[in-house]
Amino acid sequence: MSLPRKKFSRILPILLFALVAALFPASARAAVFVSVGIAPPALPVYVQPPCPRPGFLWTPGYWAYGPAGYYWVPGVWAAPPAVGMLWTPPYWGWGGGVYVFHPGYWGPHVGYYGGINYGFGYMGVGFVGGYWHGGGFFYNRAVMNVNTTVIHNTYINRTVVNRYTVNNVNHVAYSGGPGGINHPATPQERVAMNEQHVSPTAEQQQHIQSAARDPQQRFSVNHGQPAVMARNAINARSFNQQQRIGQGLRSGQLSSAQAARDLNRQQNIHNSVVADRRANGGRLTPQERQNIYRRQNNASRQIYRQRHDGPRR
Image 1 (cartoon, rainbow, N blue to C red):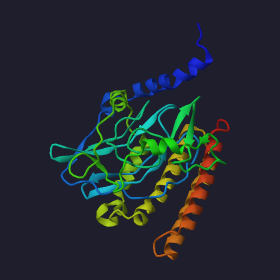
Image 2: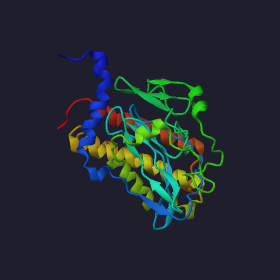
Image 3: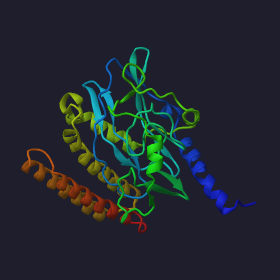
Image 4: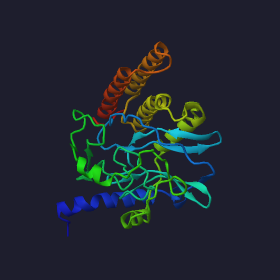
């Protein structure tokens, strides 16, 4: 007996999630924890770039730790592993006299992330930046930077943002301990924590590795100043575009000529960034930054159209 269309649309995201989760071995889903004796720096205040295309979800920036100390992993728009999945951000939590890092993950619901107010819908409890419906993601423009000429599934709800905002005026980046956020997990968050999870995607892992290799992202260099750290946000966007071009070429969705043109377009954008920074003492003006985002949005739409207009040889 076939399921009614309405009922099937409700369970489809769950079925897809189970299928994708099954493709990941248990070792890949296991959390890898890092403990540090020094508290992470305060969260910087930065501007969210526009969403590049429908279905992408915002993964907020956070402080990670490496051999050179704390470094900033910029927030980035990411493609979820499957329709219906939501992102639970990583967080630092105090325990046993050290600060323990809890990695982020994908799942059917947003779990516990220490009550940290990352902004952009991640206000410390759950997520108010949007929701999945009928296979599409609807964005709350009260907290998300969305261009309605590109993305049509949008709404504005400021009430829910105010309701769930956790007081974090000092932008504290850790939970518990001296000076940390005091937010025990809610029953809903506990349930989500015990659901089946999927680790960050390969693109997210590459984004993290890129930040770890960039000296500008180290706290010892940028001291948490958004003007210095924002440089890598531009680089991360270009990196994501190149990854999408490479994936399209490998899958046959892009021809070699299309991929070459797209990569040349990315090189031209990069050349503009270099020239603008050289003219302004190593920085971009707000107008120049918006111009780069606009050009990358146009490039993103072009890549998407090419990858979805039929098979390529």
